[in-house]
Length: 254
Length: 254
Image 1 (cartoon, rainbow over the protein chains, first blue to last red):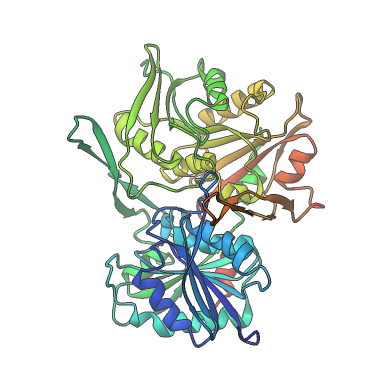
Image 2: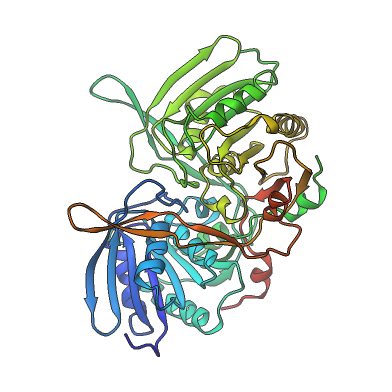
C-alpha cells in the first residue's frame, strides 16, 4: 500500500457481495487505500452485537496491488470492525471507518437496530472518525448513483477535518434521482408497531416472523431526519456514543 | 391476574434459567404481576439486535395462578420484548420493563453491546418505563442478595413516578456485600482492547474468539459509572434513546 494516501476501512450489514458496499468502494477508490471487512451474508438488524460464543473466520475475497483488499467474516458487522482493526490493520490504523451504503434507511430509532450504524458506532468507540451511509431503498438493485457526489464530499470533509471525540455521522438519503439539499438534523422519535406475524409450521406449531410498520411520532417537527427524508433532503445526523441523559442525571434522586 | 397490581415484564440476555433473572423475579414477586420472556440460552453481546431472518418460537416454562408466568424464546433479548408486547401482553401493556439482573457489568461503552440494556432500550423505545440491572460479577453463582433493597427501592420509585420520555435507567452494582451508597452518574468513556485471540483449528485453519480487556479512559473523573463502581457505589446512569449530538448539529456544515 502507498502509505501517503489515507486508509478507509469499510464494512456493512448487507454482506460483502451487496450492491451498496460495492458502489461505495467504487465511489471512494481513488480517494484512499481501502480495506473491506464485511459479513459473508446479510446481517440486518444486528445493531452493535458482537459474537461472544461463535468462532470467527476471515476469508480474503479480493486483493489488488494498489491498495484495495476485501475480506469477509462469518460474524456481525461489529465483529468485522474489531477483527479488521486487530488482525488486518494492526500496523496501520484507518483514518476513517465507513458503514454502508445500506439498502434501507437507518433514520430515527433504526439507528439502534442497524448493523451499518453498528459499524459506525464501533469505529467511533475506537476514537476513529466514522460515517454510516444508508439509502431509503431496500431493493437489491437500488440506484446508488445519485449519492456519489454527496458521499465523496462528506468523506473528503471528514478525512480533512475529523469529527469530535465520541461523535459519528448517520447519513440517510431519500430514494430520489436528485436531492433538494442537505439537512444536518436530529433523529426523530418514531415507533415500530405490528412487529410480529404469527404463522403455523407444517408440523403444527406456531412461530413468528419479525416485521413491522414504522410511524414518525413527530410528523410536524421540521428539524428531524424523518422530515428531511420525506421532503427530499439528505439527512445528516451527528450521533453520539455517550448516551447519558444529563437532564435526568441532574434531577433524579433515589 | 389481579389487574389492580402493576405488571412488570422481565427479560435478560443470560437466558431464562440464569440465577440473575430468577433472583430478580424473587425480589419483585410481591410488588407486581410478572411476565418473563427471556432467551432460551445465553445471548450476551446481542445489544439491540433483533432477528430479521430467524423464525421465532415461544415456550411456556412456568405459570402460577397468582400473576406469574415465564416464557422462553429462541431469539434475541429485543425479540423477547417485542414478542412479549405483541403476543403475550397484547391486552395489557406492562407498567415497567426490567432487564437483568445481568451477570457482568454494563457500565461505560458496554451499554452499546449489552443485551440486558437491549431489553431496556427496547422498552424505552416503546415509551414504557424501563430499567436494566447488572452486577459486576460474571460467576454463574454470583451473590445477588446485597442488591435486593436497592432493586426494590428503584423499581418502586419508577413504578410510582415513571421516567421522562425517551429515558431509561442503567443500574450497575459493584461486587460487594455492602455498598457505600448510590451515585447518579454519567457513562465513562472506555476502550476494549486485545479483543481477538487467534487459534488454530485441528483441520488447519485460523479462527478467532472475541474476548478483550477494558480500560477506563477517564480514570480521574469522579462523575462516571466506572468511578462509582470502583469506589463501592451503586451506579445509576440515566440513559437516552435520542443519540443526536446537539453540539455538533449546531456547528457542523457540509
